[in-house]
Image 1 (cartoon, rainbow, N blue to C red):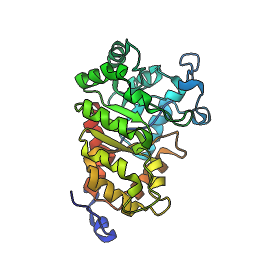
Image 2 (cartoon, rainbow, N blue to C red):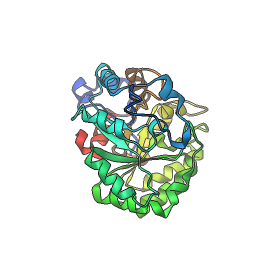
Image 3 (cartoon, helix red, strand yellow):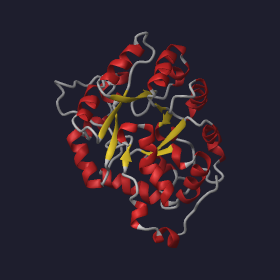
Length: 302
């Protein structure tokens, strides 16, 4: 795949119709209920995330933010650091806005009854799963990614065509590659692109293991505020990193996720920052990243 880098002049020559061809879809916002008696916090790893206490965002607030930002639809990711494996608020909240929101949840895939649990959540509206192996409240632990007890859940994802999001770091890339090869029919979506080290700048040798994921057709990447920050760290620039990323993976395997409200700022602010970071790529590739890939992963949003 050739790298398509647009100059400022050619980019501004694109028509407004070309730039608004697809609806904007966010595949990584979170929602937090303001009714703790109905939806009691029970965080994974026993520690609740600070952002969920400081910036609780109900489903109604998310919809308001989406309307202001011009975001048409979203795949809401259940907050593991608030509710553990209880996806009730994500499912119930999304059910209030059919056609605009769908829910992605978490299940303890190491339990023997995990496949039955997954089926029950799917019946309630879940359209995808997420394996949260660490983050703001716990160091990353990739052991769940290589535990055979989880394989029946992966097989069910293959059967039901459920995408599996994985939150991990560079330390879990070997396990992700193994899972992608073992379950080629499961779309694996990597949260925050597994946070590759970009500080050395082009040709990004420190991210070699990350770029090896590109050979696996069922691996997709979420581009989030973390990746915008990293693409401007050290010797990295958005203009050198994002075209290389698209050359390796193709825009059809990249999708935008706001990480709102975990990442500070309004949804509109977060969206504009990502749009500015991707000004160096074509309008067609932006179309995929801001909507078309999401609709492919979650057909209910199409």
